[in-house]
Length: 272
Figure: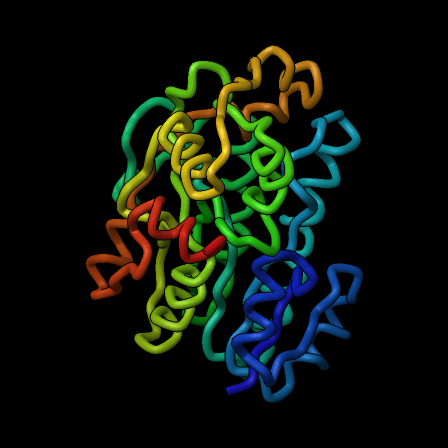
């Protein structure tokens, strides 16, 4: 099986590249013609392209977020539609959902903030693919070698970790190993549609903070005021302060079983 990946240099992309050895890399600067040439003999395309979301969302950076996702996906889809690719697996985010309530894939709407509207447009481009298509909405992907957890490790190891604000916001997360297994499951059973890449057990920021402190044997007594994050990231702080309670109903219904659906078990596995 031969695959192609956009965003191969990112945290999830690097893990996919290790899992699937026969791998072609598509650069977001590649033209549609170059992408089509690269897709010769490719069976599956993973679309992970997108500039980092945790930044200060200036007007200019919002354009980068949009172009790196929508324009890249548009080129890739146009090329796939002219190719012999058998399965397209694109990326999105649980930022598609509004804050403050529990959701699964049966919710057909979107939130009304920038991130939700970005995911709506991103998914719309992916769904223009004429080949079997799956869209995976990432929660917080946990891994010791990248992503949010790796960023948090240094302050937590120094005993400087703490909750964000009052810690009541919900965090929907997934262990990187379960995400890789989810990809494999979707490929094996040729699944299509939208799938939430989140553990069946979302937790509060307080629960996550205490679990990480316990696994690292460090205190967690220094809360981060939400106002500080707003000063640092502006509108982009909503990625850190939003409350997303999201459940993976679709992938569970397909027969998938999580190895790490408990946050403490996942953290021990990743940091053990």
